[in-house]
Length: 167
Image (cartoon, rainbow, N blue to C red):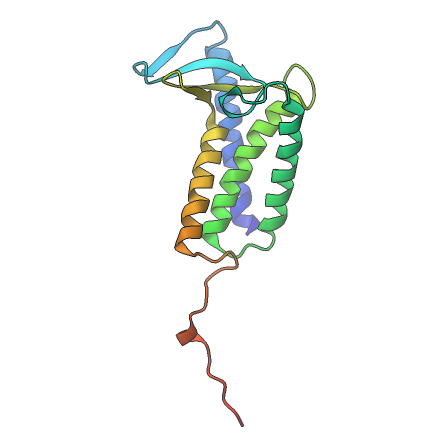
């Protein structure tokens, strides 16, 4: 599944980091760019916490949590035989890695870096491409689970199983 997951993960990371680079260049002067009126706009924010700036004083915990998530998904992908699960886990992995890169390489220090957020959703919260990947990935996981798609690949139905033939 790595052959499928790796390019997807890398694409999410590149989109995330590329758009963050753009945001820092285009919005550094405090500029706000409306996209859909006030409902959706671009504005640069450095977030030391998690979603909705939760836990701003515990950035290092989010760094550790990211390491655990990235490691667990990377390990689990070795056993994955389902295309749906593989794609979904790759998207989540890319999102987790995108924000992890910020926490490692951005100010104020290694492991406590602030995540670059720039997509303003009507003032409710400001996010980034990694956040979008994480949310879409979790929603997809819920759908996959509700549909009963097996992690190990195509599930064999009872009527498809070979009959025991005694000799």
